[in-house]
Length: 256
Ligand SMILES: O=C1O[C@H](COP(=O)(O)O)[C@@H](O)[C@H](O)[C@H]1O
Image (cartoon, rainbow, N blue to C red; front, side, top):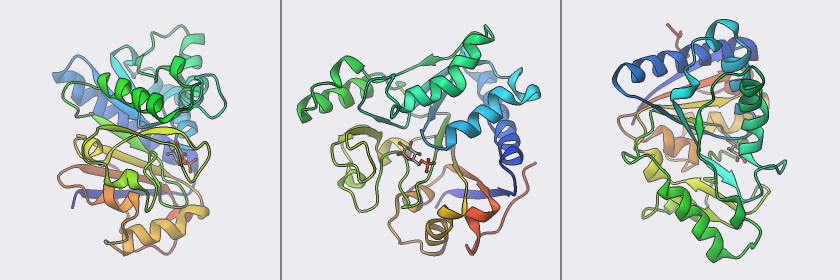
C-alpha cells in the first residue's frame, strides 16, 4: 500500500490553491537535481483545476518554470488534436494557449501522432500506442502523474472490469471499446503508473462520492482508483471537494 493522503476543501478555488502549492513544491524539489520536470496530465475536470492552480493563481503562476516541464497525457482519445474530445485540446485551451497569449515560454508537450487517428483500424491504433510509448522518458518514472476519477471509478482510460487493467507487457496500450465515449483511446498502463515518483488525484462533486467511498472502504474493490491507491512505495495525494468524500472512511490531512 502506498502512502495515501487526502486533502479536502469546500471550494474549488481553495482546492486549486493547495494543488498549486503541492505541484510547485515538487517542481522545485525536482529541478534542484534534474534539468526537467516530467509530468503527465489527464483530461476531464482536472484541467480546469490546473488552469486555476497554475495559470490564474498570481503567486503560483509566476514561479512555474514551464520551459523545464515535459508534459505527457495519462490517457488520450484517438481523435484529431483539435477535436472537442481531445485531452490535448482541453489542456491546450486551458493552459497552453494562455501561456502563449502571455508570451511565456511553454513546456515540451508530447502528443499522439494525429496523422494516424483517421484510419480507425485496430492495427493503426496499436501503432499510435507504440509510437506514444516510444516518446516516454527513458526512466519511465514520472515525477508526477496527475489523475482524475470518473464516477464509475475509472482513472486515465483504465476502466472497471476492463481488460486494460490486466495489461502487463506494455507501458501504453490502446482500447477501442471505452465504456465512456469516445471508444478509441490510449492509456498509461498500471505498470507504468506504478513507476511514478508521485501521484495526485483530483476529484470533485457529490457524483463521485459513492465511488470514492467504495475505493477507500473496500481494499479489494478492484476499482481502478483503488488499484492505484494500492501501488506500493508511491506518495499518493488526493485533492478532493468535501462533497466528493461524503460518507467515506477517510481521515483528512492538513496540507503543510
Ligand atoms: O474520460 C476521462 O475521464 C476521466 C475523469 O474525468 P472527469 O471529468 O470525471 O474528471 C479523466 O481523468 C480522463 O483523463 C478522461 O479521458
